[in-house]
Image (cartoon, rainbow, N blue to C red):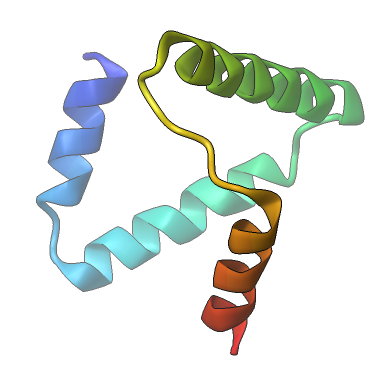
Length: 74
């Protein structure tokens, strides 16, 4: 079973089940070592850079990103 198929299946769950699954998955990340966390963040950063370089996603100016984040936080 691929990650995409698991993702689609999880998204089809009702809200309570999705929240429970999210909680379980988030708790599982607490068990990662510092090295594992650093590796995952480096992979994520590389993936995002590839997406930007390929034009798949567009960046937004820092000031706008901060402004939008502040609005979300309240």
